Image (cartoon, rainbow, N blue to C red):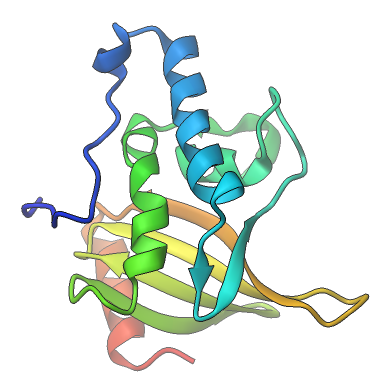
Length: 166
């Protein structure tokens, strides 16, 4: 991992909470809540919103997608590396077009047009373009964020990025 830029906060470590998972996950959620709900960021002039439902353990679905992994919503497993980087989420979104360490492109997944924000080829934030049906309000929905560690995944992302995306 390369040296982090000044705009990127330090990792939130479980050891900072003496290994107490409940205290740690509450602190990680408090950071998510402050960064993504209370002080909602913008990307390309659009608000970035987090998916609310289903709420599990009093926490938004969007949060769980950024700190856990797994295909089955009901069976996602916490990922400490994702938890540690929860403070990176907002800065990567906000700095996406200004920071040279972040590559930004569009892709298409089924009917979704998505924006991928890839910090140093190590941390990926995925946003989906949305339009609210009742009034046409446009926004970005946080889909997920995670470390990219597997070389095969990195190669796929590089190929998509380098081809210009959608």
